[in-house]
Image (spheres, rainbow, N blue to C red):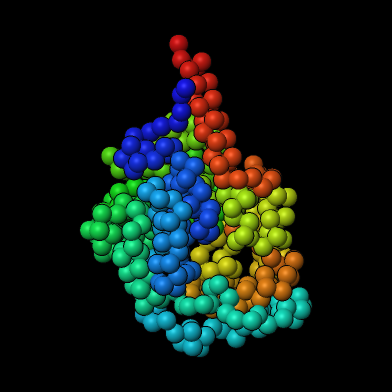
Length: 365
């Protein structure tokens, strides 16, 4: 019986060339256990949490490979100092956030929000990287930025290295950093994404990458998308949105977000900088609409926007402020409208891929 395979499967010791990104330990483990390659998004976790959670995943997957993703953008502040960042936030931005709090009657949160637990800084990034390097994780992935020194440290410890990029102009710099695998992330993708559509982007990156394997991210939701990715010269796919409605992920998901994701179509997502200061695709809600209004200030750069809105974002979910609750999601969300186990999602992706690839032979004469 035919199954889905590319050379990267043998290289990494996985059954299927399907890489799954999630912020939830159980979801990541389930992806690896289902034959794919689970990757844990740990950029908002303290170093000791990263160590503990990577060990939890290891315990769940046994010897199956999995990865961890960090965001390492350049030009971040040197120190983890909230006071220093707050001192530079313009008064009009603070006033806009205070107005949101008043109009939506948002009570104060019981603690810092997810984006204000610590400040995105060189100090934190160094400590996070140390936790990753000292762990037994098989892959180190760079969601934003791929510092050569970080890549070198990971490779010296025998880890596969990977970087997500959204432009052909980033290929040579990424290869020069020593990255083993490139993810070509198109405009369709959820969370941090670039301006170029997946179909336009991927062939250019594949050609520029040469012998470096390329994965496709952005709009991948079915086996037909996977077949198209392989036809464009990629060796696999990278999915994030697909797992948001997995059963395993529901423990990490606010119930309101589950409902909004089920109801959302591909046209119901927007790209905004209001989340972190970086471009971030999410489901359209009152939050994104408020930041698109005429009286809204221009979002600040990371990490200033993080500090500006971080506590409020935490309070919104803690106190169930339904209009403002939102989730990152790609345009592929239109293909997912029910909660299912990771194994079921994986089986469907693989089965559809085989069917789609077989169907292509009819076009050959």
